[in-house]
Amino acid sequence: MGAVKSLPGLQEPDKLTTRYGGVPVVYVESEEDQYVFGECWFKEHLSKIEFKPAKAKCDSDGCNAVLKAVREERQAGNPAWGVVDRDILMANDRWNFVHETNDELYERAQPFGNTIKVLCRWEMESYLVDVEALENVKASSKMEPERPLAEVTQELVDHCHVLVPHAAINAVLHLHKIKGLGDGYTNRFNTPDDVNTDIHQKHIPRLPGNGLADYDKHLSLVSAFDLPEDALESQLNALLRRIHGKALLERFFHASHKIQVDTRGLLANRIKEKSRIPQEIKEFVEHVTTS
Image 1 (cartoon, rainbow, N blue to C red):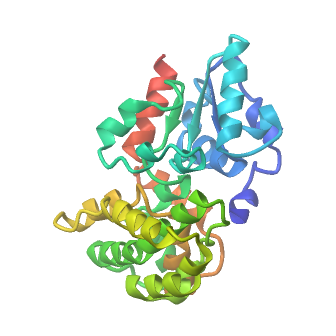
Image 2: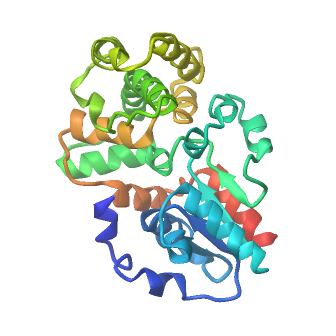
């Protein structure tokens, strides 16, 4: 997320995280996440809430650092919450929650306690997959007219389908303690079958004897998030719970539209400008500020 780091304010994280005192602190996984929450989406709320990267408390980034930071703050008697990506569940082998397709049951479970918000979508970047913002940034970058939103949504759903095997094999590789495939791995493939063929040729042979069965199982579990009979927007939102958001942005900008700059800071600001901050995250922030 290098482009976000170059935006005003991110070069002085200590200054950002100490502007206010005596308000609830929300720890997030990185300085980039802090930028999205604190400098883009909820800047006007910073007299009532403070966003900090976990590194400000425990000298490391990531989901488990958020858990540690919140735990230490709470033990010291300070009001603190955390926001972590859904992928923390796979990182901690909480597979029953990874595979939960019912959002109500998923949110009610609170596997890390009621002070940790586990996002419904796979990672923070998944919330930057906003159809209006994506097309606006793409069209502005290429100096061309914006396309109808239905066309853009269909493109994104198609990308998600290509990424279903990518999500499945990464789950299996994690299961077997093998490094996963990168976010740009599928950029050269056009269809789910292309990705699936590549996985069978190159990655299934790297797995133990039960690797193929594991892959088939996880392919089915990831596919269960799809809602093929629903409207395109519902399909997209459903798939974003399990498809890797960074990989989807890679396919959209880098593979399909040949835009090589990091657009995530632009997307966060467009989402704010268009009043399209995800309701799930707005409700969490409201909960923290009113608790």
